[in-house]
Length: 184
Image 1: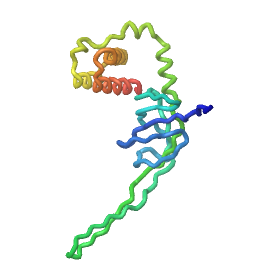
Image 2: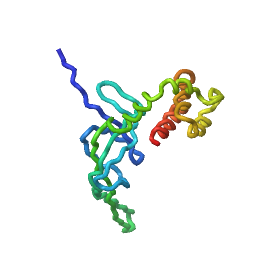
Image 3: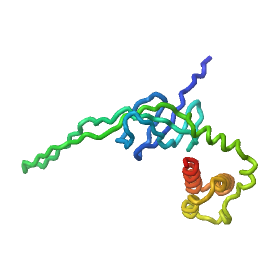
Image 4: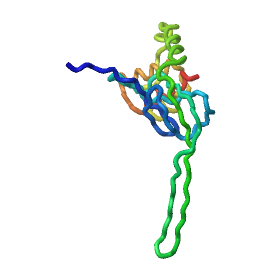
């Protein structure tokens, strides 16, 4: 009888316009970051998975530490035109940062979100109404106007989208606006 092995949790993070699959304790080279050596930072988490399940745009965070700033391997570039004697050689070394993933899914952000949810669930349910005329908004209008809405309105609009319209662009705009509000 085969036993089920526990798989390690992983996350997909976005750094410098690229996506990386990371696990705790892993080191990787990324494009040069503005963070100093030895400092920690929290990259954008796009996906959280492990143990056979996954979560798109999770509310958890990944903590990474900059180990050092290094130069990549030398890339040599040669140009040649036949019969003219033209030969030109140049090269470059990419500026990179080496980071180490310290933790996935733990941190103060999770505890503050849980504390806010416990705080006043009855008040949120009473005020949980999408903005007036929301059903008639286009995706472009939702993207523009959602930046000014309260978190309760964003959550109500997101629930409406998932229940009725299921417009991917609107759902993405609402989740990003909600994440921006929670970071503040």
